[in-house]
Length: 431
Ligand code: CUA
Image (cartoon, rainbow, N blue to C red; front, side, top):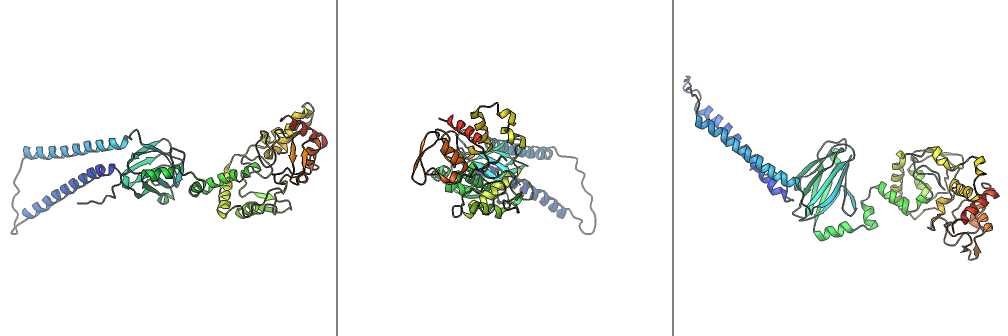
């Protein structure tokens, strides 16, 4: 009677359902018994033959009193004990349970597996093994609910909560947020895939880029691309200027372009600047970015836009910190040429493209550069000496080292001979 519970997909389900059904049955039984008796007595002792009859005075019955006190008491004690036993089991995860971290936010579920794999709104667990969820909310109270597993627990912003279950059959089940958490509450759903152990192992270890990318949010994908496409060499995310404008607070900013017009940084501007960067160059920056036409997909462009949008709220370092490298001219004379060279490479952002540790960025590293023999793009060989460095600063594209793009802007008119000398002295310190 009244068996309306969902599919039983965890080891808890039979216990939970048994006690739930028992309570339901006994409630239905007594409801019918009490209402049935009331109706029956009303019929039996109704007014008959058009005249009233007197009601007998009953002054109590100890047997009856005892029965209707003791029987219900035993029933509720039984329910309480059974409830405590099942609840205790549900609160005590086995030692070997697979730990999965759950982060709820308006309006999504984020899962993180022991090996660091992350998914959103999709949970995959192996059949026949206990899994434990350590849960925390980023914002308001949510509630983690998988009816088929018979688990339901609030997810709080102030403290961790946890549930565990052991799925008993493979399949796909529906998970819900079951605490009203805002306008998107009804869309805060997640899928639970219960798969075989082998399938789970294959799935959880599949960290291939393609696989991860299909599961990442656009913003996370953009963050990944920002590094993999080496945008980070020329565009900072902390507000500091490098070869190109910083991505921090760039979204919906009005920028002045080199042709004097003003542009609003929106989706189309960002897409154009990736695909065909030379067309709309922000004033004060050199037109040095290579075109990514044909090298990025629409999805990747969308992801980068999402990432740039997410940097809208970044704390930008105050101008004072950014200009920390600028020292008053009087002090400069007290510095050694090497120290002045170091300041210049920071101010002119040389170090955005030239590493100091030998790693390859946009341009050759300064480490060991001085005195080295380099093969140029035109096939000739030169020695990196004062004359080559000076020429490479003033007119960089005329002598490009093989294997590098002609991406460096010319510094003609921006550095005098003394400053170039200081930079050379500084470079000589990187043997
Ligand atoms: Cu989250 Cu409702």
